[in-house]
Image (cartoon, rainbow, N blue to C red; front, side, top):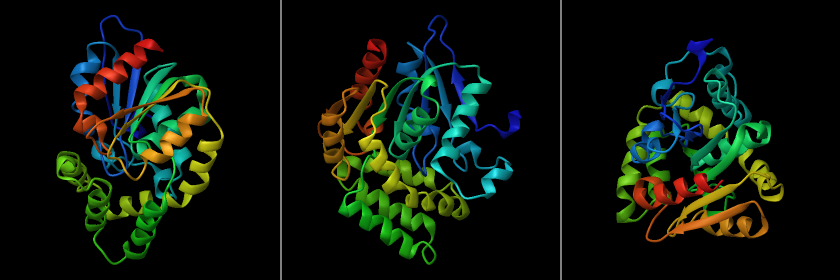
Length: 263
């Protein structure tokens, strides 16, 4: 039923047959792509989605959402949107945890994926990010969830030049209820085995990783993965942190639009 779909917004191009689906990360919303819309809609049809519990999808009624979330369930939500829009195949762009969702879409519905663009990709938890998850688990019942989110944002995006990205994500996270935050945080229990599988099992789909040079939690692992995967390539943006599409939008847009056209 239409009311059960994630909130989504489309921009249709007068002649292009290519569709690009944007998937934000945990705690964000489709508004994190505001610096991409103008550039992208000149070339492609685009779909922006708000994941369950986020943005304008935070008040949708769906019985299954009362259950424990899994990456497969969350990814299936996005597939239901493109089903409803009768989009047979699309390019998918994800940021941060959104990269795990689009990679999962590639696993469960590879025939729907033309390419993947993994921005600020989470592909392995190093000792620092594992410690961050442990701290979150220890404190999630006693601290307001927005305090935890602010802590994560400052650790992932610590520099002065990351301030715009950090502020945007903290502002978006205020829309997330504690109940929803807890459901999404529990997804971290899936991360290690899932990410290990992704690193070992290459998806035979054109995949571009776009990472900030200062994305110190995740860049090293991405370099290693790309070196061993023949369908993947990497672009690193200088003087840039985790949220590359916000901090370096012009470079991000040029790189990714050219990549999609090349595919």
